Image 1 (cartoon, one colour):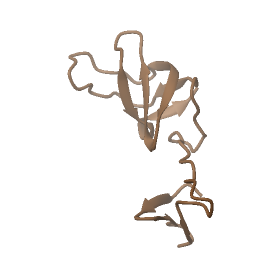
Image 2 (cartoon, rainbow, N blue to C red):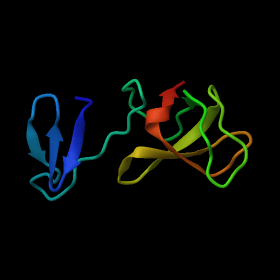
Image 3 (cartoon, rainbow, N blue to C red):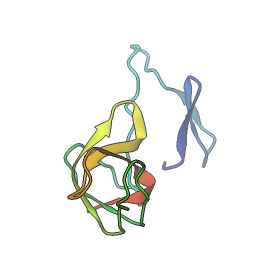
Image 4 (cartoon, rainbow, N blue to C red):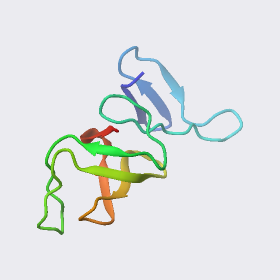
Amino acid sequence: MQNVYPDGDLYICADCAHEWPQKQADGAEHAAVTRDVHGNVLSNGDTVVVIKDLKVKGSSIPLKQGTVIRNIRLVDGDAEHIEGSSDKIKGLVLKVCFLKKA
């Protein structure tokens, strides 16, 4: 489901209220899945498009709607953010709720 969130040592589904542990029986953690605004799974090297104008901290240049971010990198342990660069701004960390897969 899309509305799954971590809470302490559990993952909880807001849709069906199902709960399950973040760690598997062998001690390994479940991998967090990074999804764009439409629910498409993102992976390293994908290309995404910005869906609305964004102000960039530390820069006077805004990131305009439709800006293409190529060759993204997923942030380890954080399914809400990706790293990437646009043509004008390098070293961006962006929230996936403002991105769609190209």
